[in-house]
Image (cartoon, rainbow, N blue to C red; front, side, top):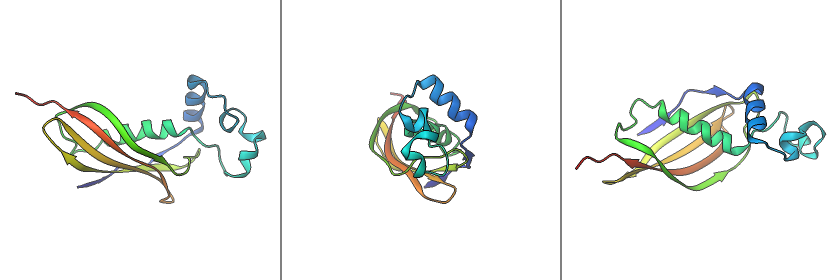
Length: 131
């Protein structure tokens, strides 16, 4: 079953918190206006890790999320295609690929408001199996 989340907006305030607390120093984040990379993007890019972090929160809003999930155990086959930019509205598409007695495996894809894929991955979750 495919879950499509609500859209959330990536804001300048979010960017400032992530960059300052994460101590990012790459010119793409620390000096975007003077970077050669600023010619490639029409707005400030976010670190990909933050977009992945947001995917987790968007996934938790799924009303059909199994109640026996304890925690994420691993991320596999993570691919970044393009950055999320300040002002983008992003959303998650998630579906269960498989499940067994100990875990669920999901496919996650994050898109921007123009329906361009930002990232995809497989995510494993530990099940709280009562014996």
